[in-house]
Amino acid sequence: MNRKQRINKILSKNLNDFSLEIIDNSNLHKGHNNFTGNGETHIKIILKKINKIPSNRLNIHRLINSLLEEEFKTGLHSLEIKIN
Image (cartoon, rainbow, N blue to C red; front, side):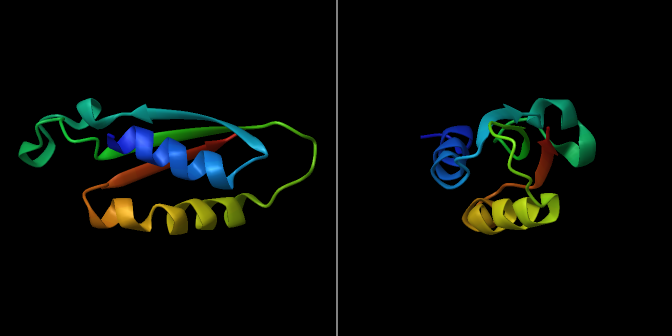
């Protein structure tokens, strides 16, 4: 299972009020500090609210960072979170 699949599995299980889109943007950083663009190190997560219940954006960011702690330890370098 690759990083995108693991992240999707983790977040799908814990963020029931959102639909998820997970994008690997690692290739956009190719050449920066000799980075090859491989390895799923730069991930963008787009969350779309399913229901009308208000949610605290800061708490969602904190939750996602907490849930993905192991991914950061194993090579995830950058995480962009967009909440619609």
